[in-house]
Image (tube, rainbow, N blue to C red; front, side, top):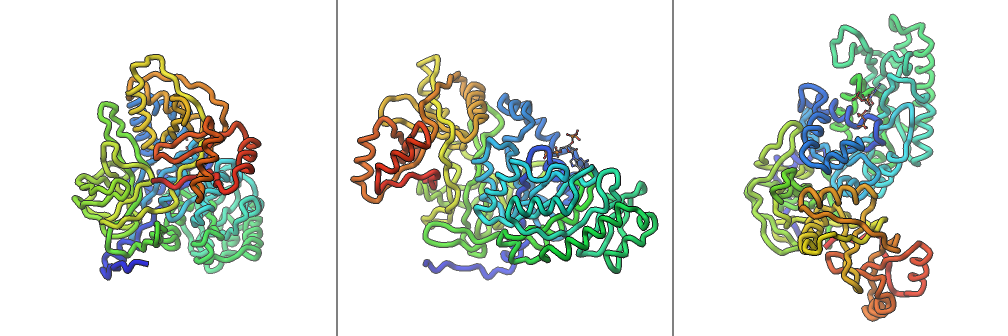
Length: 537
Ligand code: G4P
């Protein structure tokens, strides 16, 4: 292992450890947007709720592909929101909300240190929550659960906890507890602070009134609450839950085995501040990250980071892009020259962007956990690493094998060159994967979800003036193929030449008609490894 200098700077350590970089995962409609707005509101980043959506709407008028996402009520564009609360700096990374974009979402989740899982109290675990949760589990990302909409009729809290716990195989520990739900909703208990949060017309807090209790059970003696059957039942259930469920354990939480649960209402502000406090006090700061040859500690002096997203600027006249880099170590200063190991070139980062809720600001400095936007003209790709000279690559931002494969056809043959350039650009952004078959000249395109093809066609048309059609291929599966013994790989490729393509980095990819034929090929190719993911580079 290389001996790397660690910074002794107390400022660096302090700045690093107060960072909380996280994402919100949820099924559409569970309340992610509302919760995001409220977190920004409590973080002082916006004055009035409603800005998150409003901003999205303004942007979406700028190009047609944004119109697709608007029409479908989904968010293709992920953004970064930075705000401060009680001494912590929060970087909230927005994950695309649609199941089609699991690859993009995966990349965003590769850049966070924790996630908030929002669940609709009436619906429990839904398909998209489960998918996103599985992605978090792959990386053991600590998860805080926010059970939203308790002001509406919902599933009984104990039953909800049971369902989440058994269907995700995750231990849960309650942090707040609802006093009644729906029409019987009377407020929330803050179990650790022994406080009761009460709704009141004459508001003294963002939700209502707070009463400090000596013991949680005392809530039943409060005037106005005492005789209510909903409250009595809630308190009984809370006692059962506290007796049966594990208590909060920081290590288990950080390892991703135990999730603190907040029952609340994003719309009515209940337990949003409690959630924010818990993230600040208990969620992990920036973690060490694995790279080729060694692990990078956030306290190291040299700047390192990786790019988890590349987004075309919204102005179609200019082909400039913004690469979103998560800083992993060192203190970044504006104007720094960073080394780009993939191209072995230095890049001067003269106009980096930090993301605040309301406007973009030029970044003068940034610390591990922060996200920096680097404007570029297509030189930076998703998965790229930046260092101050060291040759290394961060792991864990793979390409995923596409699940839908199509050939691309154009009406106007003169446009072929322009199409190739456009596809290369959009592949760099991660919109599509591009494969060149060893036989024949027709490019094959691969995506993880159908909607990506719509977005691609629309962007090719709008931004590059190229109209394309898709044609089917016989293939439904793609796998990267490698072998330690080069001869074995060569033999396999020469036998299966018509089904082998190269990706844009020149790696070989085998395409099969079905799982059956993939298995068949694997069985007949001992020594050749078929892989559903491919580390970049
Ligand atoms: P999403 O980003 O996860 O898709 O969900 P979003 O926040 O847009 O919320 C979906 C709907 O649920 C919205 O209603 C929102 O107001 C509502 N909602 C969110 N949190 C709560 C809550 O705590 N309690 C209740 N009762 N409702 C909640 P909508 O009518 O679809 O949209 P809007 O017209 O209110 O914006």
